[in-house]
Length: 205
Image 1 (tube, one colour):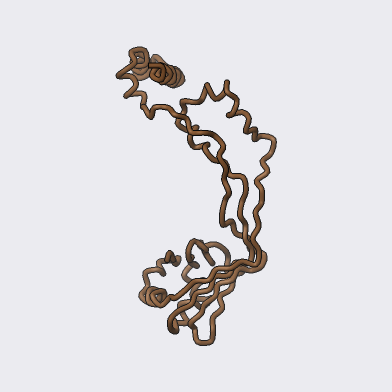
Image 2 (image 1 turned 60 degrees about the horizontal axis):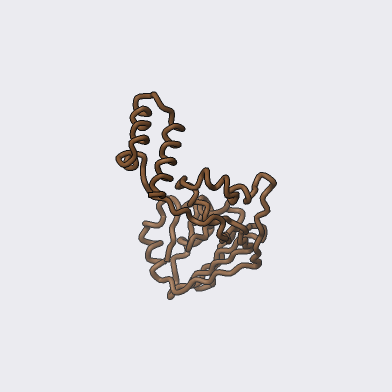
């Protein structure tokens, strides 16, 4: 189970012993909702799906980073994370004051306090009388992003994963532009245009 404490607390023998007694974790929320990402007018998905524009950029490897697009966020409120231990744990390990002193921490990616996900006023730590159960609970106003829904956007482009140097060994024109670029006689744009031309030539062979 992934857990960590701020300020190097994860390495303390006391915390390590307490966590070795952990039996179960219960995670719950008072509310969970999906919010659609409604982008402003600057976003036009049709631009990169236009065949003429796609032809200009189809050999750019960066295009494969656009295979998916985020369409909504999964938000939760009232997060409660309960730890159950097989026996009593040290009260000082999970008191609000000691937790804050260590700079907070996180369990399974859910942080509480310090750099772990909120200020000391936005969560509480409660415990059972016998200290076998410890519960971290967000204030009702705290909202967390727990997921992102994505959908296919651009189909991956089948282009050779070739560098300028490797292509230049097979294309005399690109090799000439590469040498001119090295000597300052050709610009970077000239070099990239020559590379695209070489890639197109390679696909037709």
